[in-house]
Amino acid sequence: MSALTDLPPLRQSLEAHGLMADKGLGQHFLLDLNITRKIARLAGPLDGLTVIEVGPGPGGLTRALLEAGAHVTVIEKDERFLPLLNELSEVSEGQLRIIMGDALKADEAALATNQPVPIVANLPYNVGTALLIKWLTGAYRPASMTLMFQKEVAERIVARPGDDAYGRLAVIAQATAKARIVMEAPARAFTPPPKVDSAVVRLDPHDMRPPEPLLAALERITQAAFGQRRKMLRSSLKVLGGGELCEAAGIDPSRRAETLALEEFLALAGKLLERP
Image (cartoon, rainbow, N blue to C red; front, side):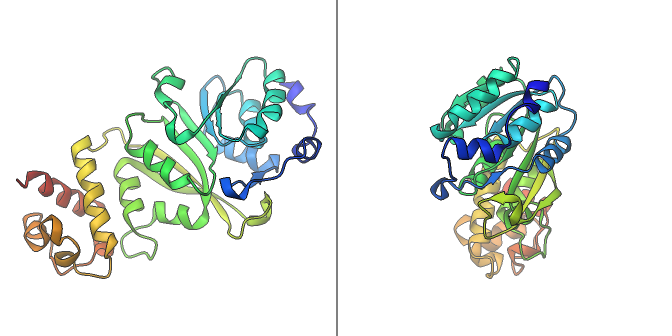
């Protein structure tokens, strides 16, 4: 991979191609290779593994993944970056595959030949949460996910009952994976700097994910409960059975959503499935 280290600095490559971040696409470039290399390390030993990366932009994280010995499939929506990615491809000795398209519509199973592979990405801010939900609840189950989010989103993913950030994202994430913040990155690490700091979340899917019907019921329960989070469950869950549903699950209907543990939400979802 010596040819990779011979490439010009990313900032220089961007200037040479006259490229700037597109705020409409939620782009903030991560050009510091010390940071991207750390993210690659946090994703685990990658030598010889296939890795999917979403939104590579100019390829800062892509370089680090290739340096780590990964075979990288990138999914990029912005065609302006194709020349930079092609430059990376030319020196990657066949280890980089470029897919131009929308990651929300991508078939990861086909890209990974139906194998669970790690997903590593500095996610665009405007679609990060939607992509995470897709990977947590969809048909394709990644081997692991090492993902950069806005810090406030990262905190929502790992939040616990009683935390201000606790909500449906935490419940869905923790029902399907072990989630933890493994790194923080200040706004100044990005070009252009966003208005908020960022953090990397590592998610390792549970060996046993809730069955699809239970997961769908959990999404309905959390949407209703946190949609009116200041109300008692008997009110917020009224359309799904309210107090009767809570009592069937052994939960006090006067409680509020932010006090319930994951197991209690799963109990509510299970009882919802039993209702006619």
